[in-house]
Amino acid sequence: MDWGITNRLARIIRPETGRTVMLAVDHGYFLGPIHRLERPAETILPLLPHADALMLTRGVLRACIPPEVDKPMVLRVSGGVSVVGPALSDEGLTVAMEDAVRLNASAVAISIFVGTDHERQSLLGLTDLVDTGNAIGMPVLAVTAVGKELAKRDARYLSLSCRIAAELGAHFVKTYYCEGFEKVTSSCPVPCVIAGGPKLETEMDAFRMTRDALEQGAVGVDMGRNIWQHDHALAMIQAVRAIVHAKATIAEAKDIFDGIAGRGRATKARARKR
Ligand code: 5RP
Image 1 (cartoon, rainbow, N blue to C red):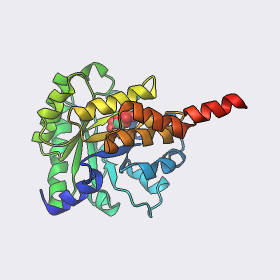
Image 2 (cartoon, rainbow, N blue to C red; image 1 turned 90 degrees about the horizontal axis):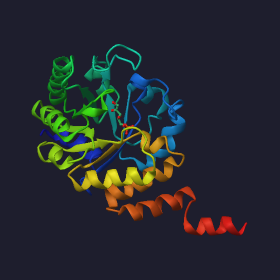
Image 3 (tube, rainbow, N blue to C red; image 1 turned 90 degrees about the vertical axis):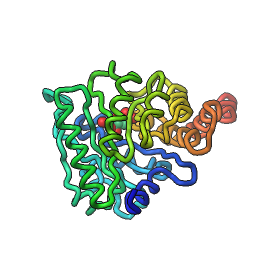
Image 4 (tube, rainbow, N blue to C red; image 1 turned 180 degrees about the vertical axis):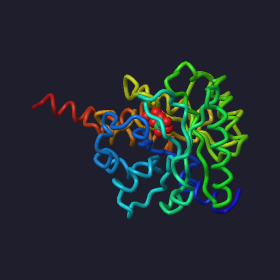
């Protein structure tokens, strides 16, 4: 890989551990003001110190993130559809590479929709982006979207999508965790990060998913709702970070979470005495 691409990627996937905690906050590009991202800056800025990178749209980047912030930005550059429109898979490119460079992005992200009516268009969008990314030194993250069809989150489908993304030149891939996830990572020759998906019932579920994905070959997370839709978002991101970078067990992650969320043993004992 060219020096520029390698250098930008190394800002995202931390060389010290070979892992990353990306904070995904791009949901508004098709969902509008999703719960707890209604005022993006209020949600994002407190979490930012604990993330290795932010995944977002250029609109939120320009409007809500101070330009002094020293964090790599992964810019979503696909979209053009909405959750109330006819087909979530009918995305196109929404940002010119020139604007991504102007914004000093560290990578650009595009969704691919394997197996849908718009498969070809999304895959050719990926290859166009890889061509312009390679020409300019910009890594491309392919997101293996499943839209509303959650049934597609199995190892057979996700390994097909991730492998196609890598074959077409994506520099790294974002996908979902699934049963048999090792099949997905082992057949994908570029790094994989996992999305968190819809908010899980408990924080332990999110910790378990993170640990299992890492043990089965993921290089980290690009997590959104399971962090910022939680009542204790700051505790969530720090606990997930400990699993990713410090190899914390899920019990240790829970202790970190409880301590920061004020649910620790000492805090509970103090509360009982009052
Ligand atoms: C939407 C995305 C989101 O960034 C992705 O789904 C990650 O967020 P979450 O952890 O909430 O699933 O790429 O297409």
